[in-house]
Length: 378
Ligand code: OGA
Ligand code: NI
Image (cartoon, rainbow, N blue to C red):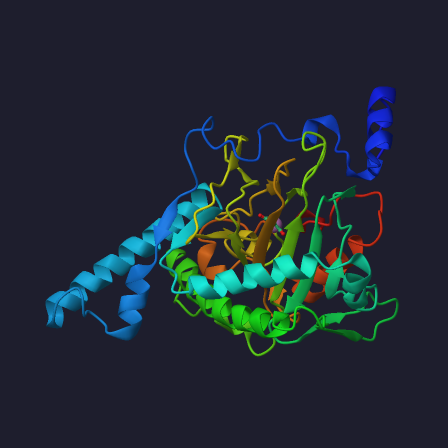
């Protein structure tokens, strides 16, 4: 990234900051990390408690018999409608009463905190490499600018199979494996517990989103079975002395199915509202942030757009977040769902998810001189 202003160059040198962190002026943050007031309308918050009730005892709290089940199906319809509206208008929403225990969340946070606090040489023992895309990494390039963050990636299944960018015709699959640090000693167990419970929630959300499009609740489930490519990322955003010049993650869209994210109380996640304004998502202890990724944009033929978001960092507090990227099997071919087209022409050609993911992962390691590969390349 060319930083040319001599005053800025000197400032960065004094602070010993890599100029690759500096964003072009038009992409720098405009609001402070914890400013939620100026923007007006906020990302919707959706209460999932009716899912918990209907899973356990159908109709129980809505009353007995036919009346009760009529009432609970009305409540469900209302929920599906809220989800659909949020996907269409924002691409993002928060959920509360999601059924995941907050004490487990505490454990994840404590373990993440302790892991990232280890000396760099310890963390580098589980470093992500070109051969193994899972593990610790500290200099991800989004849109070819360095992100002000450290990450640790692992998958729900322990492995991630991806096609190798092949020169010939024969299909080659590369298998990445989870790598676990020795310390903290509880790290692996807690991460695995977390991934199992969030996976359950992600399937429920997948069902609600399918229903909101007018499809059967399990319509998309088949793409996740038997070998999804879900992965979880622990994000650590250290304090940043130049929060007006850098971002924790610069603007991007999530390429997969959907993302279920928890964040600590610090704040900094911003979402691009339809009018172009960047809106901060105010952290709420018991709320998870959900967004639909590029796959839903394609499946729904642009009804549900994958929305840009970014992370603002700050001088005062380090921040943690844990996104769960809920992604289908690498063999999934993605194209607009025929039943959803109606009179419209498909806006996307079919593409293979595994090949897409492979290209994207590779782009984190090299500055290829092009922006992140996005769906419009297909
Ligand atoms: C991501 C992301 C947001 C956050 O990792 O893709 O958008 O709040 N993270 O950390
Ligand atoms: Ni993201």
